[in-house]
Length: 64
Image 1 (cartoon, rainbow, N blue to C red):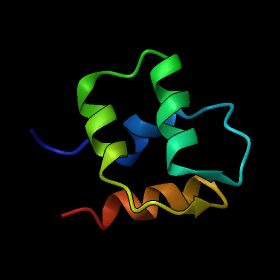
Image 2: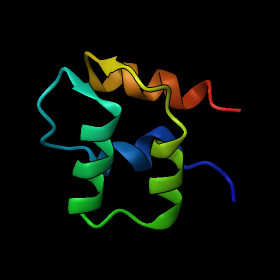
Image 3: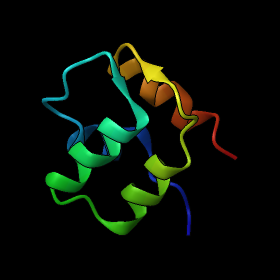
Image 4: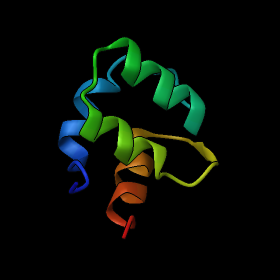
């Protein structure tokens, strides 16, 4: 399955209080009803803290 693009992912991360770690992002997206593709993309993120939505988008862009 192809990774979700950052714009799709950000739709499910609206309202996140940054900084946020990977687990917080995954939990938030799940609570917003994110589909399997979005969830798989978030699960592939490095386990670190993200300061801004742009940091999340950058990390998604680096997923192979």
